[in-house]
Each structure stands twice: as C-alpha cells, then as structure tokens.
Image (cartoon, rainbow, N blue to C red):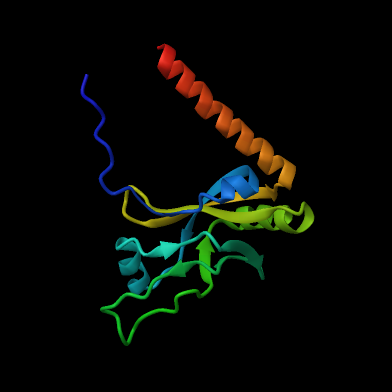
Length: 158
C-alpha cells in the first residue's frame, strides 16, 4: 500500500512551548488571522514570537495582542508595526463562547502555535486555559521526569 505523502505546505511558524507548562489547556480552537503583506513575508522567513502574547475579546471581536512579527527588510516604506493588535477570525458563536469563558469563568485565551496550513494560509491555534498554581507546575514537571526515566529504563532492558 502506498504511503500517504506528507503535506508540503504545512509549516510551523512559532510555538508557545511555555503555555502547556503555565496553563492547564481545557480546549483549543483554530482561527484565522488578518495580516498585512509584509507580515506574511516575514512569517515565511520564520521571524515571529507568540510566547508573550494573549488573545482577548473586545467589542465582539477577537484580537491577538502583543505578538511579535519582525519587520520585513524589503518593505521599507510600507512595512508593519511589530507588536500591533491583530484581528483573529472565527464565527460569532465562537467569539461569544470565548468571551463567556474569559469573562465569566476566569479562563485565559493563550496562543499555542502559529502555522501555515495545507493551503499555505496562516492559522493560529488558541487554547482556552486555566492558570496553574506552583504545586501544579511541580506535579507536571515530576510527571515529565518520571516518564523520561521510564523510557530510559525500558530502552536499557529492551
């Protein structure tokens, strides 16, 4: 049977690795993002950071706040602002659900990963998360260490 060929267009641009350590992710959602041309060019070069950013619902719209996209060198005059607010695209029902989670339930909207999908369009995966306490973080780190140790033992005996 022929092996399914991997998608050539899919590419991870930026990942927020710290999010899974700092937050307990309840669910996630894929959203589109409104970008300028120079931002897309810069993202194709892989120059971005979403580690310090967050998503927020303001006036019935979803926004990505404080995400960094490096300036594109060739777009001198028509460049973009590096840390501007960027509009995120999802349905009104999803925006209402996210607003409800963030305002009433005290959840946080954390960007997890920014990537080019199979059609070459920039997408952002947002996690609906609850902040972890220090004890929870210690527990997560202990579990991770134990899993690594288990793998080492299995490798040695296997």
